[in-house]
Length: 196
Image 1 (spheres, one colour):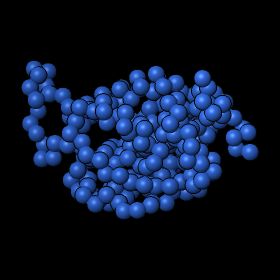
Image 2 (cartoon, rainbow, N blue to C red):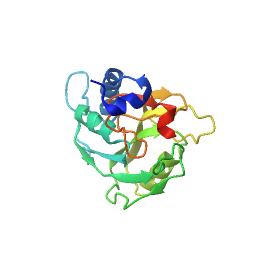
Image 3 (cartoon, rainbow, N blue to C red):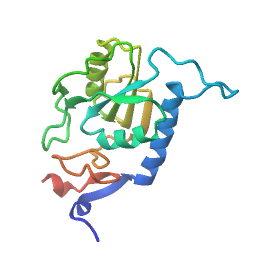
Image 4 (cartoon, rainbow, N blue to C red):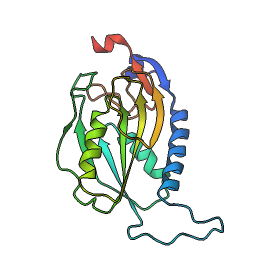
């Protein structure tokens, strides 16, 4: 049975199976970098002053990616949410990032991992990084699910990238158009008549 929203798909850019594999790989890299493993003799390293990480997802596009990623992370982790809006309503191009709500306040001395859905213009991620650095974390790393090939984009530092994709408007796996399509399990492009 074909669901109504599946008729809107032009093509599948990244299949759900490839996403699942890549999320596991990213979780392994993050766990290694944030100190999951002991030495070669199997002895656990000494505990740091704060043996946890604080994950700051940029809402709302990152929620599906975040849910899958944190279930693969074998680390003590807490969540502190940050809402930044760049694509209001039926927009398919960024209108500039605007922080909606309060910034996480308890990040001083923390090991912070920012999680975002798409790096396209780079401005949303730059804003998030700037605001979090002002909170004086002990360290900060950034993970994005998708990085678009946008030659004119700002180039904020990104430590973990799920997939590089062409500069196309995509939905699915948490990404939306006018609030819809987040629940598609693949990353897809939409048929042109959807935007008419």
